[in-house]
Length: 287
Length: 268
Image 1 (tube, rainbow over the protein chains, first blue to last red):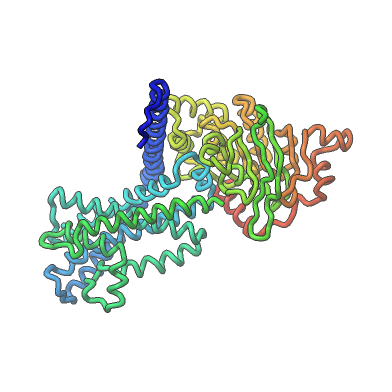
Image 2 (cartoon, rainbow over the protein chains, first blue to last red; image 1 turned 60 degrees about the vertical axis):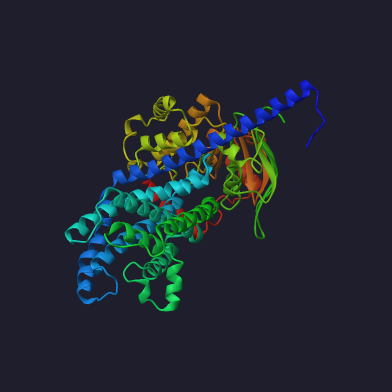
């Protein structure tokens, strides 16, 4: 501790300087925060306007959950005997919701590569906005697309007599995990796009990655049915935790295996890591 | 540093492995100049452009834009430059107006100024009547003019253009030149462009630098360079003198494929 007292004028001056420095720091922090969030919203607005102009895209996307639930689900549910306490079609519904969200999210990478082949990525990289805002904005854009799948799956589930929890908070919870899932996998897709850089390679790798993500998860069968090595893979797969949460919240009489809090934290943690990697890699796309 | 200088490069170098794309370049550009970097493909023009627009970090050396170092403060540099990439940078699935609106938001232009600025620029560039059409329906020249507005929305101090008229037909090319000259006159912005079109450099630029294998082999006033070679000398003669007849140097297959695809997407 400084015990020697400084002359009054000097101390006052020092205080002023210090306060001014703190004020300046706060101002910079404040401006940066505003820029960060506005940038996310503007990038999101780009995506929203595109969805609005081409709403047929959303319509075609809804075919996938319809096929899985009506064809695969209907047929398999007659044949399969599960150790779970719920009918197979109930078990399958949250899995198919997560799968549709995953497949939509994976398209983010293709869109990013498309924007690279034009010069749009360069334009974004030269703009005075944080790169993490671009990455997250694109993720939230995917989430909006994913919400359309949520509506389709709920409508189907109603007609298939799935034991849905229709309470407001249940739907809100499902929405939250659908949004997190979309942000997570679209950012994952963006990271892959930044690494492979060309459409052809992305198409190949995209397939190779989405199918294992899907099959090494609890989407269409319980993890308990898996061999040990696959269980290990499934337990490090974020899709497993998304589906665990969706299944617990969406249906009546189900509970989470890992705990909703853990599911949430795990996903947020992975999103943060992917956003960080994405922000570092994204500018490389422009080179 | 001199207040009249817009850009100063100091031993700016970029190496990719053993390839030296930009080789210890030191030069400066005065404010309000229209400055052309001319050279064949692979001469290092685009790499230099990417260094100056902070897309690529330099291997060595530094450059200062309005006295701000691209090495130390790339984020600050981005606030005061405008950039029109060689590829299409306007989003084809949105209208021209939407592109302008969203980028003006990204650049933090205040709400009450946005519309006025957009409308004025659309008028200057002759795009008012097509503002609400999808950019994918624009002609190549219209897309370029829109991109110039996009790059100028935030009143940058320097506008960088990478081969602004490559792939355009002669009429569209001329319109883009005229509008660039108009913008230059209106805003007094410093313009730095790359080109391998001598006519373009001759029409637009008061200063040119000939760049070969990452080095500037000659630089100066367009008029002086020409008159030094004789009364009727063209910029093409100047280029041939310093560079040999190499403007049509071998294009890489990838480059050609990419350019053709872009051109067909741009609809020119």
